[in-house]
Each structure stands twice: as C-alpha cells, then as structure tokens.
Amino acid sequence: MKIGIVGYPSVGGSGFVASSVALELSKRNHEVHFFSFDCPYLLRNSESDNLRVHVVNCDQYPLFKYPDYTTHLANKLIEVSAENGLDVMNVHYAIPHAVSAYLAKQITGVPYVVTLHGTEVHTLGDKKEFKPVLEKMIADADAVTAVCDFLAKEASRIWNVDGIRTIKNFIDYQNLSEVEREAKVDLSRPSLVHVSNYRSIKRVNDLVEGMIYILDEIPSAKLNLIGDGPELPNLNSRICELGLENSIKCWGFQDNLSPFFRFSDLFVLSSDMEGAPLTFLEAMFYGLPIVASDVGGVNELVLNGITGYTFERGNIKDYAQRVIQILKDDQKHQCMRSEAKSFVMKNHLPETIMPQYEQLFEEVALR
Image 1 (tube, rainbow, N blue to C red):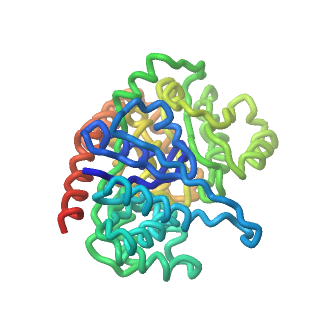
Image 2: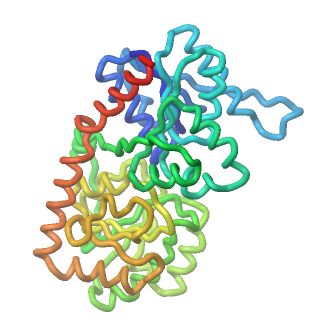
C-alpha cells in the first residue's frame, strides 16, 4: 500500500508513535510518506527505500499573525497524493492534522484515519475553541483509533461518535537493545526516575514533596527528573527550599532514556491526567515497576500489585507509601520487575500491533 503518515516531529508521545508506525510500515514493504514541519528524530537516519519524509514549509505572509500550518499541510498532502497515488492517510494527534486530512480528502478522495493520543481528547476535546471542528473531523473520518480504551471511550463521549478502535502503543525492543549496549549513566541506588515535559498537569511537585516521606524510610533513595518544561524552574526552587539537592537531580532533556531506565529501580508519575504514556512501556521493557496516579488510561498498563501500583491523584503520602512498599520488599520488587517486562513483551511489540494498523488501512482503502 501507499500510506501517508502525519505527525509532530517531537521525540516523545504522538510524534514518536507516528514515526514508529511509519518505520514499521516501511519495513513491511509499504510505500510510506511522512509529513511534518520538521524531520522527526527517529527518521533522520532511516535508510529505508520505502520511506520518504515531506517537510511542510510555512511561508510567512505579512497579513497573517501566525503561519498557517493547517493549509500548508493540506496542500502538501494533496500534492504528494497526486504525484504518488496515496491509498490512505493516517494522522496522529487530531489537532490540526485531522483538519488538513479532511481538506485533502475533499480534493483527492483519499480516505483518512485519525489516531487519538491524549490531550487532544481529555484536555482540549471538550473546549469550545476546538469541539465543533473536531466533532466534524472525527465524524467524517473513514476510521478513528485511540492508543488506549480510556481515550476511545472519552472521545466517544465528548464527540458522540461510535466505532473508535483501540490500537495500543508499541516499542521497538530491538532498537532499545542496540541503544542499551552503547549507553551508560552512573546513578545512585535505589533510584526513582520520572520523565515528562514539566507542565502543571504533570504535578511533578508531588514527586518532590513525596521524597520527604520516602527519605524517612529509605535515606539513600534518589529521584532523577528527566526532561524540560515550564515548571522546571519552580521545581528547582522547591528542591532547594526543602534541602533535597543531594536526593533529587534534574538532568534536563535527554534524547536517550535507555541508560536511565536500565540503572533505575522504579518509574514514578503523578499527573492529573494521562492517556497511555509511551514512557511506561519503555520503562517496563527495562523491568521497572510503575508507581503512578490512578487517572485516565494508567490502569491499563499499571496492574496493581503486578506491574506496579496506582495511588489517588494528589495524595502524596499514598504515593510515598507505594514507593516504600516496593523498595523495602526485594522479593516483591523483583517479581514486579519480571511482570512489567513480560507485560510489554506480550502486549506491546510491533509484531502484535502493526498487523492491526495494516488490516485497518486495507479495510479503509477498499471501501
């Protein structure tokens, strides 16, 4: 098949999934065209003859306050479809990609599939600034998928649409294994690790405050914060106020998370809302149990007492107790490590997930 994939060029989240889907489809001998405003990190060194990246350039016109990416993307989809005869378009993250795909379909007739990832549903989907347009784009899509059951149900409720399929996220374990052999990082143990974009919705301050309780029971514990974002300066100030500089380290943005997962003991997260965090799968692949707030689609990955624990959102003491409970029981910790990796290997590898994408694309193209 000839498939157009649209996604953000970001390292994590929807952009990483879109890039991964494109790579895997190219390995399966499909002709893949990837569209974004920059070349994604994952695709920069691709040597596949079946994969082309189309960078969408937005010319700035003096009349416009902001560049019009939506229209430029639609035009690029139309252009590439006319030249190559695309069979289907798959857009990852609905805003604004679904609008561009809708416009392209009106001119080319090429069907489009929307893949929902998270905030475009649970954070933005019901807002008056987005809802009417998203409702139309989702209703007119030839198929809609979501990366977890929670998002599928939320999207159905918010936009009053049926038939959304769940196609779960996956990780390329072979690529992770290659990276693992090359990278090392020196972390004190026991080590907790957190990765995010440090927005207020992530509630990372709860993890910082929780260290006070954790250190009472496990004085040698360390919290490693990976990533960058708007809340990080405030977090650094709070860490200093609490005198936790020796127990919490901010590493900033890292394009390779494997060594941090390999040399840590737990992955922790305290968000107000989540869909299906891709970092969970990477951490679990390395045998890290997850301790996370019980929100959104988290409980589809964190099976209480098996692959980790969930806690009530905002309950810092409950969070700390869950961490302590695992780290002070070596037998439980080792058992959870094994279960976490087994869960990923059974449910979230390309061999399991990609045939679902292929089947759906074939169904849509033949309608």
